[in-house]
Length: 154
Image (cartoon, rainbow, N blue to C red; front, top):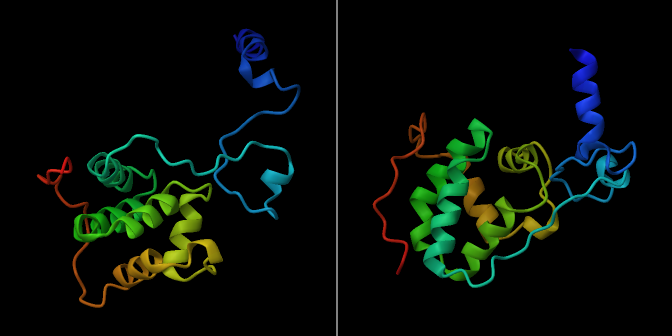
């Protein structure tokens, strides 16, 4: 059985790049060993032809489905509170942040102050996010907010 699995894997796309395996890595730092090892690192690309309403709806969804519960809670409560009121500049900054080539752990560490924020992300939306994470009003954030009834198609 094991030999059948190995034979199957050898014929699949894992081996089409020689003996290197292409993995989706989300860190674009030049000092990152994954990037220097020649592994493809995706970069942020805006969605062409996307309306403002579609972009806000996408960001709302992406903030809820990060794959890391800590970021799901922090980002989903943040967008529930601020996304509809954000101007275009802040929405663009937020879009670049959560769709950047950095990992969710990097974003989390920046928000809680465990790692320094790279200069390209030290902006207004990051400061607003940090204030949200500090939670000085001691709001309860034990679960994601309910799905909105917002009309994003404005």
